[in-house]
Length: 201
Ligand code: SF4
Ligand code: SF4
Image (cartoon, rainbow, N blue to C red; front, side, top):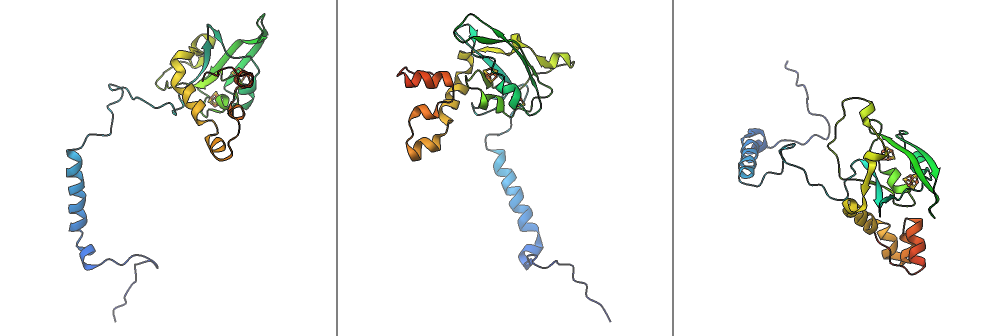
């Protein structure tokens, strides 16, 4: 007597006669492939073609230079929050009203995971995620970015800074109509706003 072995698992969809032919599915796949031949490709021939990324992209972190000076006040928050301990810095005193600046500021790009936490905690918007993503290093020493390689003028980072300004707690502003000063991340910018000064992003 022949024994019937059930191979279908419980809950498995039963195939109809049409499904079991397989040809309709193959033809539908081929039709889709054929359609795509006449559409604009979505792939980019990198590295020959550069990839233009939006301001939401988190590339390598950089230090913002404003009016010829770094914004950083060497508070050390970014170094403390950095999960893989990629940031090393040493503070020094200055004659300026901002009092301190980073005499040494280094980011080990072999450790950086582009999480953006340094940018998030910085009270001065002094460290931001740049759009730069294609950089190489041949030695471990080259992967340690010192201050001279980290400093980038604010003008080159306008897109990211404006995006940060726009995205800062938008849901809170919409629902509860908190004063804009509550949504200003930077202590410097918040003080300026409370004093009625225009706050640049
Ligand atoms: S992006 Fe993240 S991992 Fe990289 S330096 Fe900032 S906090 Fe550290
Ligand atoms: S958190 Fe901002 S201000 Fe503080 S050390 Fe880092 S970059 Fe400088």
